[in-house]
Image (cartoon, rainbow, N blue to C red; front, side, top):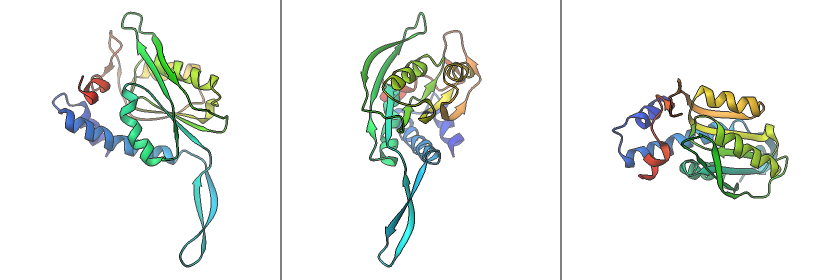
Length: 199
């Protein structure tokens, strides 16, 4: 199903309404995939007829979208993990140097046991993601408990991430070919944030 949804997102003729709906559907798939990566704790519950064994997510979850495109993934993850805390990191890429510049940060209290899920659809150079992880680890997150969720990645960005943080888990819908000279992902899907928010 992911490849079908991605095809619609990649199509330059997909209108805003359809882009948003398909992006939301894909985000739900990614959220469900993320749930399989989280440690679970066995518990006992009472059904109307008897006690039985069940499970719950073991550790607290912090969802951290990277502004602004990461906001598009947030509703699906809140639906899947409704008790999560939410933080925000604003990073904007300098189009001349391609370096990520921090302009906003609001991080909830994070312990070393918490699962921290970073939401950002596009992994191009990896600069924003690396900076976001540094911020989150300074706030208390443990590297091996951080999961990055993306829609499309470039090999250059993945290499940058693994060079700095080899223990980070990643769940990405598609691994694309390369970056072009302007550091945009090829074949990509254009600017996810612009298309989702119609700007």
